[in-house]
Length: 135
Image (tube, rainbow, N blue to C red; front, side, top):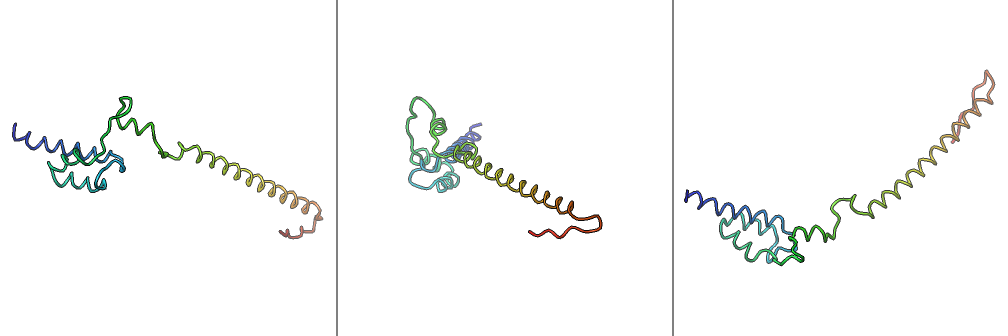
């Protein structure tokens, strides 16, 4: 039982430090880039996670008793998805209006051309063919 604990405790520490490192925003990783911290945690089994917890991450007390993940969730500076961004949605609506306007113009032009073809066919006699349409 003690032998299993000797292997499981460092493994659990390494897994916890690895997940903590991956969940830490890039700007909160201290001294080294986050990718370097991941390699240190995985390569140096016991020492890597301890160093990560001691010096690798900016630690601060969350305001109002919230956890750091909640703080980041409520103070997001970038949009997660395009449909969360009101500017993107407004641009889509404007583009949709332009497309609808273009479609209406095309439909009106098609109706005009069809009417012109009907007039030409109506003016042609029973044995005559309509003159070719020119555009």
